[in-house]
Image 1 (cartoon, protein in one colour):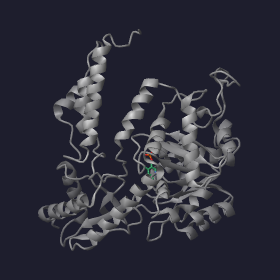
Image 2 (cartoon, protein in one colour):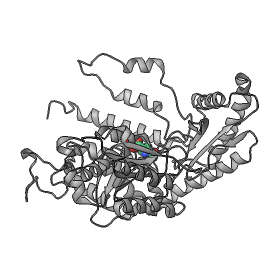
Image 3 (cartoon, rainbow, N blue to C red):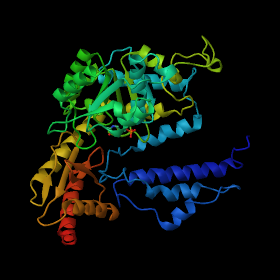
Image 4 (cartoon, rainbow, N blue to C red):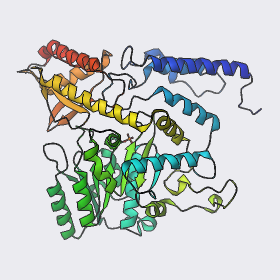
Length: 473
Ligand SMILES: *Cc1c(COP(=O)(O)O)cnc(C)c1O
């Protein structure tokens, strides 16, 4: 027995079973009660303790903290873009914790399962059989990995000498996620090298503007090296015209990356699939398992058409990491050759387990049902005099607001959202569209029902009617 193994296995076993039951209770009652619950002051204080010099038993605290998460397991969580998770996620996490593998490389089950998940995803997106990929924390990291490969192809000396002279420039729409900008920063390209292309009325990238910007940059002696399309933008769920983007990338000979954090997975359903066909022509695609696919946090994926380019950008193993033909240092797929991390957990297991348990057809139907719910909410908003739509409903996101004459609508709607969150009724978030504040309702939640949206609408109107007198101008 090791220093850190339990002294009393029977007691540890009993504790583990009790916590498993508490975890299952938490998930079985996910649709009940409040959405978000603020942390009680005394718990917050106890969680901010001194360094623990002596042993104590954290098991009770593990149970005690469970009600104070984000609230995204609840059917009326509509904020930002969060997945709701699934009870099935508990099992592979237990197995992965028990195995405690390091999935950075070598010949064991973790790389085999990770590689299998990557193959499945590449096939579903429409990539060729020799596609490459990596399971990552999320789309933010996937974007960094993807754009590094694009950068290294465009500038052979970038890896050794850094990016010199600021010649390389890239493009995404002004609706693209901030992780693209962060990747430009982290890859030494500089955020000014990322051009924000304006959008049309549907919040999709304006393709004529993109062409014009590329031409102008070339004339100035700069070197356009990538375009980033968004499949499901955070603000309103817009999907860029990916087929045209693929054409432009081919004509201009630049890398085509798709940020499909949540939207890419709608390819599993029927309702948005046609608008996602252009992903198959991308050089790289990044997306999340933890959003619309409902895998428990966190797991995302980045895929590449060109395995050699992907590997060349990261594979630089030191002597102590040398592979071998046989033995534990064998194995064909070493994640360390495809991304910046060496030691990594067995994230692939929960993804594999989730896909096995549900099958992708059911996951696609669940996504389609969310799209239909967004249309249902759109109709409810349209039918209400006190509510005004702020953007077209492209996919699964509604942006609208409570309206009344003679009030500061931005401040009132902000207050309505905070009230709903604090009352535990629902969690929408807010955004700004064309300068105006909107209530934003994102549905990437397999638990949401029509009745949840009915309640949301009636509570927004009730709150607006009650609060409007505080915001008269
Ligand atoms: C959530 C999101 C991201 C970032 O993904 P993470 O998994 O949070 O890192 C990027 N792009 C879009 C469109 C997103 O919705």
